[in-house]
Image (cartoon, rainbow, N blue to C red; front, side, top):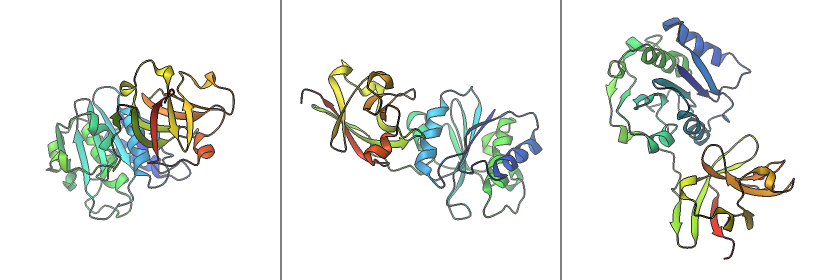
Amino acid sequence: MITLLTDFGLRDCYVGVMKGAIAQIDPHLRTVDLNHNIPPQDIPAARFNLLAAYAYCPQGTVHLVVVDPGVGTARRAVAVELSQGFLVGPDNGIFSGVLQQESAIAAVELNNSDYWRTPTPSRTFHGRDIFAPAAAHLASGVPIQKLGSTIDSNSLVTVDLPAYSIQAEGITGSIQYIDGFGNLISNISQSALPEPAANWGVLLKGQTIPLRQTYGEVASGQLVALIGSHGWLEVALNGGSAAETLSAQFRDRLELVHLGR
């Protein structure tokens, strides 16, 4: 199986063209669309969406990610092998979330043109000419080492998002993603939360927001903090957008605080 994650949208033919390039290599491969509405050139958003989806795909899945503002420049085209499957795309930080949780078995730069769609790829559409063919070859059983030169996985680019920190009085983190509902998803994982959770809240933009289990535990139009289905602490607005209400942005700082403080 190959998953596709891009910022192409569905207005143009670009997603379909990549699927066509995959089918030219192996028409029996299954493709699954994760998201094609990543905001244009939004590498952190691509990073989070891949991280949120990775664990729910079967063994051997090839994750094809094309959010590539540096297409045609010196940025590397790469493939990475993990215990659960493969990552294929530009080396610009989109894989850094998964790679914080999963160790790479192997990584290559996709510089063997025998596995490209054409030896003279477009300078503006590597998704079609390099990444989609590489993903198809991997999904069809071609060893990753044949696709290009081995590189050190530790040299792969990462997204600059500070890790959360735990202090005696609480946890300091930041917003790593804002979803389509305007929910503010932090980089504080569920495993980091103290117990009992009801005694804690989130301090963000000068407001202290209670920690609950569901959106409906607060009145419509009220802010609430909770653990989302993705396993991260988030801030939401019941029936609305927390991002708009708080004028919050990616990387904004937040704190998990004891309500008795």
